Image (cartoon, rainbow, N blue to C red; front, top):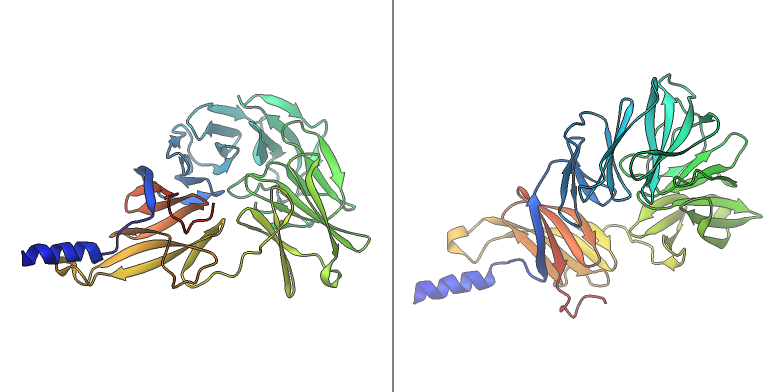
Length: 368
């Protein structure tokens, strides 16, 4: 009886996974998370972090992978390959001889690429729109000067370029390019329509809009677009110090930073939202009022595993203190890697498995 009591006590007191329900698990692939959507490995394999579907373009070797518009896109020498993350709609497009395809944007099944001669500095390229079957839907009427695009999720400004480049990892839903003489040329990847807008600073959001910023009559004006027309526009008032802000992507928002001042706007609506505070102790990520942290838990209750270390990812509400009880916890004897945090789900790498958990909706501590 004593042994049984000790065993029960050890079981009750040992930390375990709680507050979540298993959704799916899949064998892990090495690599990194791209565009907050898929785990990409080996240049030709992607694991969808929302569904657990794994896709591989086995005939493709080399090249640069991108995740955009629910698809894995791989740009290689003289060709572009694409497959949807649900393993459907695979296609290959071959660029004109002597050119290199450079993916720039993707939206509604269409991928926009620049076909550029592999000559180096100040390449003049043609813009091409490829439809959901990899067929050419449109092409620019003349050669255009394509400069170096900023990495998706970072600010862009005009400057000299030695070669065209696409956003790293994730493609935005439209393409913005600084032009000589001032202004930004925005191209809709679906129709090829272009519009010249004022400004010099922009942010290409992976699988999201292009955010543009300009000072007009002393007023800060910021807008977001996924094509030739803005999704929203905000006039923020006089710019602090008359300076342009640094733009960056936060969780579902765009952050504007000036010296001593910050402001955050919702990416979907442009409305003001709470700015993401600096990361706290052990913080891994934030999403919709949740904060994920890492913690190692020494075992002190089980004589058979005394001194072992358990690894935990804990979720707390953003308004609670770091020492408050978590609303959910994932515990494993293997080191845990947080791959994705969403308002109602979390995806982790646990040993050789990738596991997606949904948060327990019955928890009264979770926000609706």
